[in-house]
Amino acid sequence: MAAHIITSIAGNEVDNCKVTRALLSVSDKTGLVELATFLSSKGVQLLSTGGTAKAIRNAGLEVTDVSDHTGFPEIMDGRVKTLHPAVHGGILAVRGNAEHEAAMAEQNIVPIDLVVLNLYAFEATVAKGSDFNTCIENIDIGGPSMLRSSAKNHAYVTIASSPSQYAELMAEMDSTDGCTSLGFRRRCAAQAFATSAAYDSAIASWFNGELGETAPVVCRAYAHEMPLKYGCNPHQKPAAISRPIGGSLPFQVANGTPGYINLLDALNAYQLVAELKQSLNLPAAASFKHVSPAGAAVGTPLTEGEAAAYEITGEVTPLALAYLRARQADPMCSFGDFAAVSDIVDVATAMVLKKEVSDGIIAPGYEPEALAILASKKGGKFIVLTASENFTPPPVEYREVYGAVFSQKRNETIVTAESMTNVITTKTDVPESAVRDLVLASITIKYTQSNSVAYAVNGQIIGVGAGQQSRVDCVKLAGRKVSIWWCRQHPKVQALQFKEGSKRQDRVNARVRYIEGDITAAEMPIWLENFAVAPEPLTAEEKAEWMATLDETALSSDAFFPFRDSIDHASKFGVKYIAQAGGSVQDTAVAAACDEYGMAMCLTGLRLFHH
Image (cartoon, rainbow, N blue to C red; front, side, top):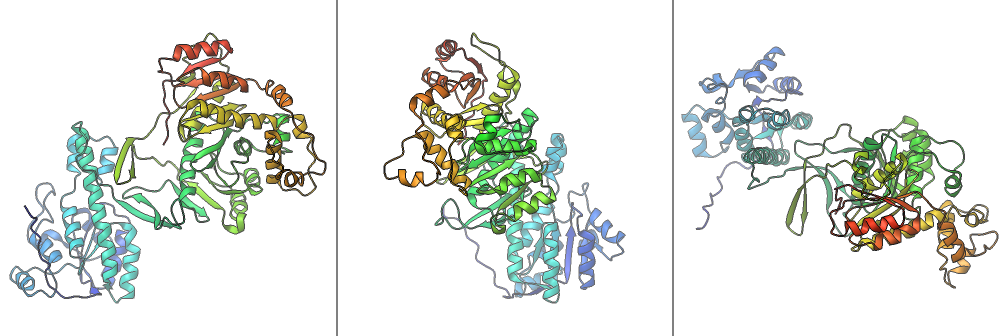
């Protein structure tokens, strides 16, 4: 059956509408008295209800109770107070329509030009753990009715549904001699409908949850926060960041203009370092590129070999150490990274970042001098984000792909030392340093594109294998990075004689190519330009001998090892401790392989896929 479509109702077509009468009924009294005072100064008659009317009177302003305006008292414990033709007729009447104006005259209804309201705090009531009946009582009825009535008739009526709109409303009326423009009313109406949709969605989701069912319809309403230059690629326009209505963003922009991928990196990286800090109680840092970590670390002291390989001299703070380590896991991949740290950024950490090629940083805060250093980087374009204190992410995550909407419970599992207690190998001794490294590696792969594994030693990730379809390929990819990391500390690499004035990143790249040793004939002359003295090759035998000295390495996998091949390959990189989810029919065979290499293996019971 075809839907019945109501035809539009003719009325006056106007831009600026004078506000002569306003109805105010708010649960959130923020800015109420200031707005009411402003409206009164413009000669606007004020109508109100209950506690809102009391607050306005206490400010010395004249206000008419809605019950006096309608001639009908509030009844049923306030459940019925604005549901009256004198209210909704005054809001919904089409100005300039002869039939509507005749009905208003016959029923003694006067127009209401501005409605200021916000809804009962239903979500806050639920969040407090209130009982079922209390939550039901905090479902607003009159508010949403007036909200929708006002928004529907926005051609003549202004609806302000949030204190955040009051300043713009007052500025609008000041600039238009007590009027509001059609463009302003339409924007307010759009936000009102979004607020109504989000409110009803929250109620439906909660109610169905109480019944143990999935809500048949999920409404998610968003407020636009900022435009982005483009999405993943320059041709993907428009792009923007929004927040759920009633919620907030988990960060504030302190400097620069973040892009789409910058923010994906920042939000994933900050979750990683926050969890490291929570689990290990050490300053933590991560270096992200394309939504996976190039490195992550906690603030443990450097060995002499590490300090020399990283070109670090003098004392640095624990937080600066954490970022130094995170960046130095794979300094080629970290070129142009997005950094995240768990603690307030000090000057030492800012100075480390100052000399690196990096796009931005997210942190819980910044010392004033540190912020000034970072804000001056990249000609003032360096991105500085401040993570929101005490931000609580929604328990359910949503993602839209090709017209399909996915939802899942957020991965709230926190990996801790307790996760590493189920050791199933002959070797059962896992020292505290190894537990730390296993936790570090496991939290790192929790935020790495799957399949993934990570090697760690000395409180630092030294190789990440991300996004491979085969688990053993992850182990090999990450192992290649481990090999380069360890060989950077080889005496021959340390002794390379670079030309005076060579750039830091050029030295990093040249060392990596020296270690890899597969320089082509065409590449060789360009590579040799880095050196004051042409270096002797690092032979395969020398590399193998050096790799044999790497020991006490930890390895974590985001899911079980289906075959022993991963263990065999990991043995080449000093691996002595392994964490994996377990649950494979091959667990016993994999444990036996670990026994052959003298490894201890923990089954965490946690699969940590991330897509």
